[in-house]
Length: 310
Image (cartoon, rainbow, N blue to C red):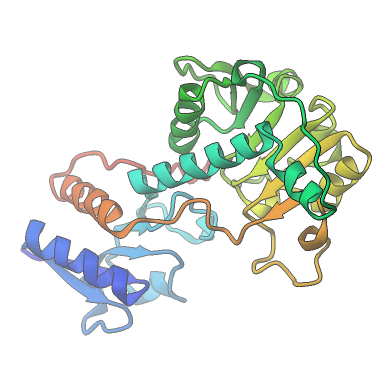
């Protein structure tokens, strides 16, 4: 019996994944949206965003695979209870995210951004440096990406703290959890990295009150979601010299408007949502393995709890 899969996304990625599926899953029939002759045959959908009216158009849909690490781009409230939702746990995404975070933690740690600004005035000034073991990096979110980033930073010698909604234990990481421990976690974070999923609880979390608990001179790296950060509050804390630098890769509206204050601020680096990109080959292998699990009636890796949003 054939299993029909509908892919909705870029042609190049689709061609790569179709080739992997043909080699590894001969009983799977690949469809590239919108070319579908029999919508009732579709059992699995792979997409970043869902087609309009997909619940009615694909009545036998059983699994939706998100091509990203998050699922906040989907309206979870509209996903019927009988449809499983699975997020992408691509090792390529984890590697890319760890590289991006490590790069900018090091840039902040070694005052790269200060030197860039000093270059503009031809100012020769050597700034003091700290050993990595004296710098505390706090990671908001200890999921797959957070733990990968923590290990990379530990390998560089940084002291790493981590915060998660529920208690976790990660080797080498001082772990905090829950609302009661958030303030203590922030007070011990010289560089704050946000890797939280977007939920009702995390929307607007990085506001003036929360960020004020960071030590004076701390910096912020946001690679979670733009809706988690109140940009005006961040700028106010930087301008008042409570915070030092910010590296922002995600924004509540993307692309960021060309007249936005963040573009021109001398202590803010804007990057266009490129911290981690799904890698076709590695992500394709993850999909193949997960769909094989589905076909074997085994638990799929990355299954989303819709009540939590991740």
